[in-house]
Image 1 (tube, helix red, strand yellow):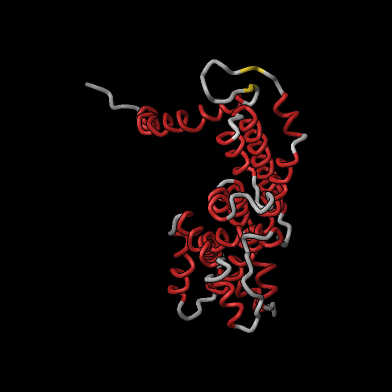
Image 2: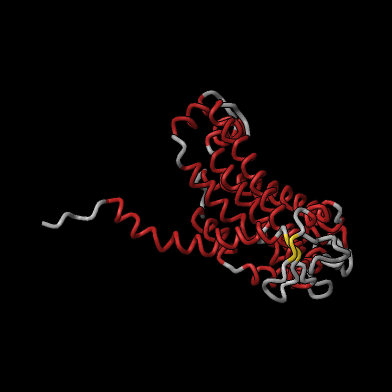
Length: 300
């Protein structure tokens, strides 16, 4: 009698296609990037790579555009985290209190997340338009006549303006995520806080927020990844990194170095630096927030 296949073989059979795709399209390209960062290569012909060791990283340390792009990325990350997470926590807490029209508001907030990044960027391109844009028209409508402000064309507003479409798109997703976490909180905890005379503010910061901190940590890591990757689409379509590189970020600079300047080795070095930075920041955020959960510390 033929023995049935073992559970291990069944699991391997179903995991093999996904594992093959992951290795072929993620791990292998990642390995190639780490290798390429040690070479000078213009991408014209294979076999013409020139090994230069860590010279690309020496050049990177002296590159003012790289540091400008990195600082812009960090500013975007902090701004997106503060606004997106803050707004999502606020609105999810309100929705968790079962207000009238709860389902309608959930669907409304989630709708922008269903749109593609290119569509979102195009919508906001028209919103920011100096003459026919909705933003300048709305400002004039409420009595703030500031004229035809080129929100994407001046250095002091372009960087923040680029982040708003991304915040508009992703905030709804995190509202639903935080709302789901809040609904898992035992009602007895909230009832006990109210019996003790806690205000809504105290209930949120002393009961709700500590209990959903792991969910917030995951959201912060996702937003950090978006601020380093998805932002490429918005910067490329809205400002092209201008004016005067005021909105230049690492993904757009990597694209420019590799596919416009044809310095693929140097572009790979920037990619490796960005990868290490993102990994280190994600590890720090998760460890910091999760350790507070384990120690049972209050607050965020």
